[in-house]
Image (cartoon, rainbow, N blue to C red; front, side):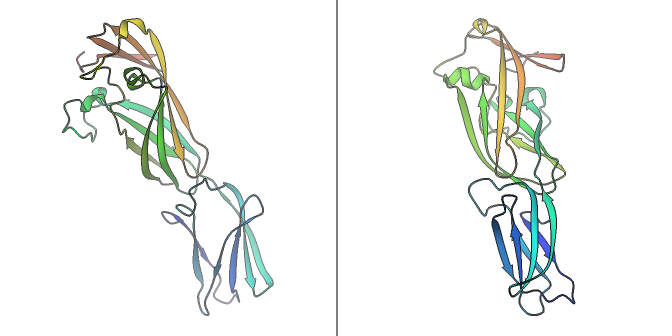
Amino acid sequence: MGDATLEIEVANDASVEFISLIDPNDELFDQQRLASGETTTSFEILGRYEDSVPTGDYELVALDGDEQVDTTTLTLEAECAITDVLWAAENPDMEWDKNSPVWDKNAAVLIENKGNIPSLLTEIQWTGAPINHLLSTETKSYYHETRLPPGETTTVYSGGRIYRTESPHSSVDCGELGTESLTVTAIVQVGDNPSYSQQIRYGGTEQSCDLTITDNGSEDSLSENGDL
């Protein structure tokens, strides 16, 4: 499996002119022609369509003209899961862009692909985050183009200041919020779109917010300006 392709090799002594890839809906996904003497070809999995690629059992069919030479079934899955959401203020040693004075309001999303084919992250949607309260918007989206290789966990840095509660023009009155649920959803090209929730307790006042992130019963409290 390449970075974005499914690579196929046929036996040297096989007489094969075409290889067809049939998707789980029994529709022709793609077909490749082998020139005389060729034994390898590949199918593009990522970037071929704007819409999602169906996952499941695919059938590879080898043809010599109109005659079926061989067939085999393979399962293609991109099983993506968000394993953690990290706040820059609590993880200062990560590779944040620290050129901005508010870099510590950023977030990072860890996405694990447990499948056997790559996927492509195209968008991350944030709901119920501090930035949503600051901008008075239900969902805030940031667009990405990040490969999610199979068997690996990829760190994706947010495109905005997710944990920000103040701007030059407005601020969040944290004393009125209590505990809120932040939900992040990753939009991927291959496989289901994973989601992850994080509880945030808001405290302090409109001019001085204290955010507490609670995960699995453990709590760490930081003020919005990054102080303990």
